[in-house]
Length: 573
Ligand code: FES
Image (cartoon, rainbow, N blue to C red):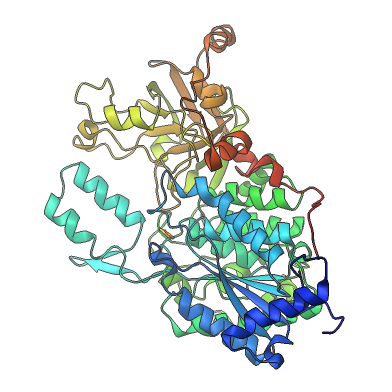
């Protein structure tokens, strides 16, 4: 049976007799027709995140076939295995609640199954961070392939794509500009192919960050889901996984602190989703690295937004791909990147940039000298209302609201928001500041993407398009507006949002990085002394209990506290 600990010889089930374990394993796997030759090869595991509920992953079976071809051409044995699949619109209460479960599922399968390397196939928002968190913890050689963005479509002559336009059309419907028939019709056109959202939302942001992080082969972030190149990229990743196994190129060699910095730099330069910072903090936590938000903010001041893509700009992911994809971005960003970082290609990021094809004329990716926005997309706010910090995506804010003072209109929960936001008697006027609390990691739970608080209908019908909105939850990367997010500590554990009262004055000053409540320290102390946490209600059990007992705040990535880096004491054959 051999002494070599690779392929099917790895991670033998413990019966107390290793030869028996291997003998039994072979007997079972041979039921599927494998030969001894096949079973003697190095094994590449492939995560199968296909789900009938997940249109963003509908092309996963084709990608798996292509990855398998690449593995076999390189002499290995590909083995796909299922893990949880998460789609944004099919996860109650929110996909973020399940991201850590997917990370645990993926990590434990990578630890439990015999594999010399793993190809991670993700795409929809939470899947890529979950898989990178898993890879960081399992530290098995791994390479990421994303499903790729959907194609853009058109509605009555207007180009549309999920999901910035989903929100634009919904705002038109709420303000009475379009009727019920048209809003139904537009659902036929917003998502015109399989694949991930075709704007710089969270999925695209994570794909671009993953390429910059070095965990994906060059060019992989932007190839549309339905292009033949997507499959050629997958085939190449399968072959490369075999090399990663040979070279023992583990994620800890690729995802170094300097590589994480590159990913943050790209997050800013692409005008990426605010979720990117939460997910990167979680991935970094798995590697024992803490993201310094002040350093991130300083990085933002010197990193302009280069991509003219929705929701910050005009174009879509298929345009970015035609404009050269991440090659065009990395070429421009070169002076700001850590070029010595190893990538899964076996070359450094600098070597990959030097090997890029010659640039050509296009107007989707701007040069450093003529950016879309001179400061980075995301800003870190401080002040007595931001607590340990809050973020705002300044590249999608209304210019007129970047410095603003207004009267607080407070919603105590998501339910309260749903009940009162469109009440004609709601005491709200243009210029007020909408506050949503108890919607954070523990409060909601799961920190849902509810930070894009709708403009109250009565104001929307008067033509109000944007208001300052503040919450302790997240916002979809596809959304836009003057929206402060991730205020932490969250209200449910007594953070500053818990102390706001209707009618208080709130000051937002984005250039000065300030978010303050015009209430004296003494008054705030009195309110704090009177505050009591909400009753958790019925007895908790299962994953819900695990989540509430262990989820961390946004700045730590909302990971579970016990999953951050520490010595792993379980079996690691
Ligand atoms: Fe899957 Fe947008 S819903 S990427």
